[in-house]
Amino acid sequence: MAPRGVKEFLRATTCASRNDRAAPRSIAVMTGGATTWRNWGRNQVCEPAAVTDPESELEVVEAVLAARTAGQTVKAVGSGHSFTDTACTDGRMLRLGRLDRVVGFDRDASTITVEAGIPLWKLNQQLALRGVALTNLGDIDRQTISGALATGTHGTGLGLGALATMVREIEMVTADGDLVRCSEHEEPELFACARVGLGALGVITKLTLQVEPAFRLHSVEMPMRLDEMLADFDRVVTTNEHVDMYWFPHTDVATVKCNNRTDAPIRAKQGYKQWRDEIVLTNYLFGAVCKAGQLVPSAVPKLAQFVVANIGRTEKVDRSDRVFCSRRLVRFVEMEYELPRTEATATLLAIREFIDDEALRVAFPIEIRVTGADDIPLSTGYGRENAYIACHLPTGTPFERYFRGVEAIMDRVGGRPHWGKMHFQTAQTLAPRYPEWSRFQAVRAKFDPEGRFRNAYLDRVLGELP
Image (cartoon, rainbow, N blue to C red; front, side, top):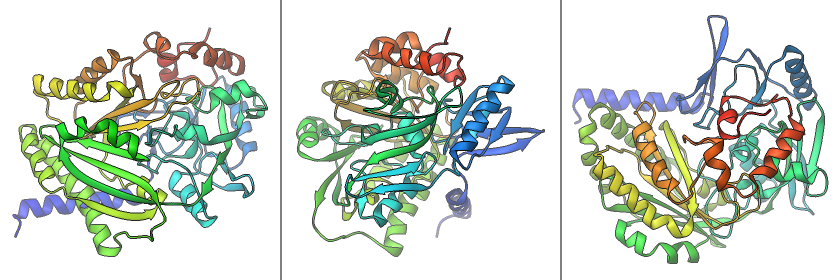
C-alpha cells in the first residue's frame, strides 16, 4: 500500500488532470474590470482592452473596423497552445472558438472548407465522418486549424511538409475590414505568405484544405539505446513514412515510434487498457514524476531512470489521426528548432553535452522529428529537408537557462525556431535564415501598412512597421 502522502499526491494530480480535460485550453477571466488571458502553458498572460467572440465573417469585419475606429490593434486567438506571446495583445482580442463549422466539402476535388476556429480534434472527427483525412498531423490536436497554420505547425515524415502545405484557399479580413479570398490563382502573393502568416497579415476566417481517402497506420514504438538510435537515424527516417523519436536526458535510453500505412484491420487498445496506458501511465504517472522533480530537482536523474525502466514495446493499428495525435494532460513549456537534417545527430549530442556540463535537471524527454522541404516564405521548412528538436520543461520550472543554451547550439547550425514555441530571436537574427524574408515583409507592408495586427511578439520577430 502506498504511503498516505503519496496517495494524496496522486489523487490530487489525477483530479487536476480530469478537470483539465473539461477546461478550455486558454483562459480568459475578469479581474478588476479587465479581462486577463492566459495561454495553455500558463507562461503567457495579457490584458486586452476588448474581447470579441465573433460567430460569422461579418462579425469579424465589424470587430476589425471597430478596432480601427478606436485606434486599437487586433489579435486573433484560438486555443492558446502557443508558448510564445504571439496571441497576446493590449488591443482587441478576437477569440475564434465560435467559428468552428464545416462549410463545404468537395469529394471530387478532395477538399474541405472549414471556419478558422475549428480545433484539430473536431476537424479530424468531421473528416472521419466523410471518409477522408489529412495526410499528416502533429502529435497534439487541441490547436485551432488557423492557429496551427499561422505558427507553422508540422507533423513528421521526410516526404511531407507542414500542415500549411495542405491549404488550397484562404479567406481573411484585412486591416481595412475587407474580406479577401486568396489562392494560387487569386492574390497569389498573399496566399503564398498567409499560409504561415503569424497573424501579421489579417484575421483568417475560412480555409480550404486538401484531404485524401481515410487511411490506417501501423504504429510500432520501442525503446533502444541512444547510440543505437543515432547510428540508425538516417536509415530509420528514410525507410518509414513517419518517425517520432524521444531521448530521455540523464539516461542512455531513447524511444523510436514508426508509423506506416497499412490495410490491416484496426488493432488498438480499448476501454480500461487504453485508459491505463494512454491516460494513467502516460499522463497521471508522468505528471507525478514531473511534480516530484520540481519539488526535488536533484532527484530528476533517478526519476528519469524510473521512467525509462517502465517503457516497453507497443504496437497498434488505428485510424490515422488516432495514431498521429496523443493526449497531453501534463502542462509544459516548449522550445523547438528546425535545423538541416544532416545536423540532427550531432546537434542532439551537443545538447546532451550541454545538459551534463551545466548540471541541468531536465525532466522531460527531448523529441526529434523530420519533414520534407516546402516553399512557404516563413515556414521553418522552407527550402530544405528538416529535422526538428523539441525541448520541454513542466510548467512552473525555470526554463531560460536551458532554452538559451539550446538556442545557442541551434544558432551554430542556422536553426529556425518554431513560431509558436519559446525562443529569444529577433528580426535581425531571423532575417538571414529565411531566403524570402523580404517577400513576406513586402506583403505585410501592403496589407497592413499601419500595423493593425502587430503586437510585441511581431515587433520583435518581424520588426516594427514604418
